[in-house]
Amino acid sequence: MKKITLLLIVAFFATQIAEIKAQNIQVMYDFERGQVTSTLEMFRPDAGGSTYFFVDLDCAPKMTGAYWEIAREFNFWQNSKLSWLSVHLEYNGGLNTSALSFNNCWLGGITYSGHSKDFTKTWSLSALYKVIPGTVGLSGKSDIHNFQITGVWGIKFAKGWCSFDGFFDFWREARIWQGTEYIFITEPQFWVNFNQIKGCEKLNLSIGGEVEVSANFVNKGFHVLPAVGAKWTF
Image (cartoon, rainbow, N blue to C red):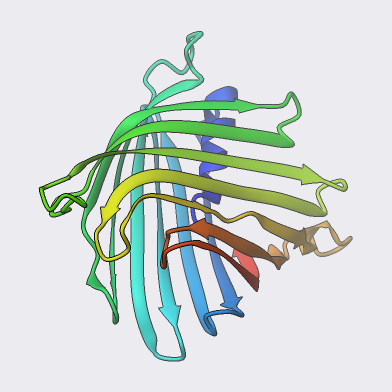
C-alpha cells in the first residue's frame, strides 16, 4: 500500500503546479496473516522538488510492527526538457516483535516520470544505489552495498469511479537466514471512489483492496497475500 501517492510527483513535474498535495489513511485486513495494517501517507511539493513519506502500523490485534519510508525528489529544472528526470534520496527503517529493529536503508539515484495527456495514466521508474549498514553476505563478509529498482503506476478509469494503482520493488539484500540475496514485492491496488456519487463529491472515501505478491520478502519463496480495505483522502 506504500508509494501510491508518489504518482502525484509525476503530475506535479509535468504540470508545474506548486499547490498539489495529498494525504491519506488506508486500513487493510490481511487474510493470510490475520492482521490489520494502517498506512498514513503524505506528499508535498515545493519549488525544488517534493517530499513523500508513509508509515505502516501492523496490529494482530496488538501492535506488532512499525515501518516507515521517507523520500525526497530534487528537481530544480522543472521548466527544462529534462523535467521528467529527478534526483531521488530515501531512507527506510522499522521494527517488529519477531525481527526487532530492521537494518537502516539509505538509497540514492534517479527517477524517470511520465503520464498520458489527460493524466489518467501515470508512471515512474527509479534506479537506486542502496546501502544497508550491518548486512552480512552469504559468504560471511560485510555486504552493505546493494541496488534497488522501483516502479510506480496509476490508472483512473470508468470516469473516475475506479483506480488501479501499484508499485514494485526489486532489490539485492543478503539474508543469510534465508540463503537468499534478491527480493521482489509488488502491491497492486484496486479502489472504487465514492466521491463520484452525485451530491457526495466531498466524500473522499474509497473501498477496495490489494494483493501483495512477493518473492523472498518476509519468507523464502513466492507468496500471494490478498487484503481488503478502505482509504480516506484528505
